[in-house]
Length: 216
Image (tube, rainbow, N blue to C red):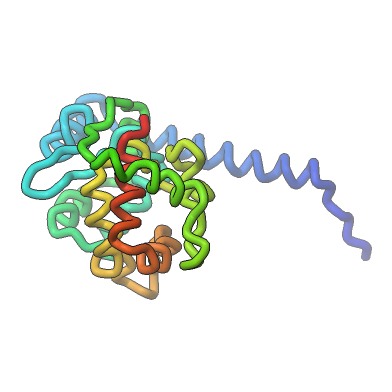
């Protein structure tokens, strides 16, 4: 019995069908949440993340959620639910979320686009731009743009960095192993960042954080 080869066109069509089916599933999950339920939950989120989800500086910098990639947000909320990512506050927030609400929240925040809060040292921006676009070859650190995009807006599981609070980025990258990947049997999708965070110096992290924080 001869096996028929599959043409590239047919393979692409199959992939597109799968992607379309996944998108439809996400849309249905999001629509399963009422507008009243979603508003109540997003209002609650904004008490920490800012009125337009642009981030907030209090005792600790709270990350910007506005404009974030839905797939990344869903991955991280699931990591909190499963205790693969450490954050006592988000443990309590995330574990009560139903899958439909997780999907609805991710879709909601994607469409917000407030101005960045800024506040980073401007003198660090040129160096940060160079690292973002070219990486650090001597330390085997690839360009940030290779995953997060030339505009730092991310794609799919790669998060948006544009407009993110510079002090939040610094805290996350300098404490990466203490927060991420806590269950090694179920590695987080962001595990790819572990060696990069480890190999960047604090000065380099500050520079990159300053650069992306002022991008819109």
